[in-house]
Amino acid sequence: MDIATDVIDRIHTTAGSHSRVMCIEIMGNKAGWLTLYSGIAGGADIILIPEHPYDIKKVAAAVERRAKAGKNFSILAVAEGALSVDEAKMKRKEWTAKRAEEGYTTATNRIAGQIQAMTGAETRICVPGHMQRGGSPSAYDRVLATQFGAYAAGLVADEHYGVTVAMVDRNVTANPLADVAGKTRGVPDDCAMLNVARSMGISLG
Image: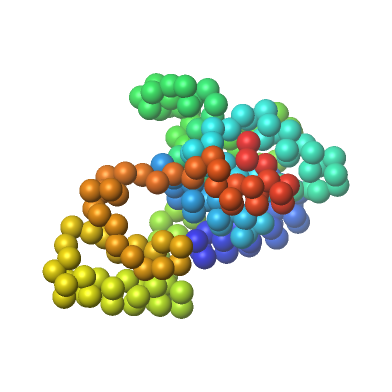
């Protein structure tokens, strides 16, 4: 998240100086947590995540609203798994084939092309990709890993198996593997951070 936030933050310089719309593809094929949090932290103007299919007309309108307000650039944080409203009604094979037919390999490529065509604004793409997973852990990461390790060691000492260590409401605890294994925890409709984004004027498409 720190790296994704840093990328979004640094893009402001080029976006502003060149009057461009910048689409930054953030990791998140099935869940939009990383895109949502880094988008808010990095100052993105539009955030698109898999759990909330976007309407490209609304996205383009958000870009045009900023332009009319005298803001000469817009920054989009786009989860790699973002889907349009139309795609959300299709099966994966169908929308994958449709994208291939149209010549777009990713949602970000298509979104950038559509925005440029609909608004006339010069649009570019930035894909930090797997760099988001690299680098040194932050102090928070190190403390969290230590907390988890200590808790896990205690579980082993108590011969309490079949669980995974987790942070719930800032408390370290254990969840039964049967409750979480193989399940994706997406951003729910009532997520407080979605309301935070909306209150900041961020478009969610």
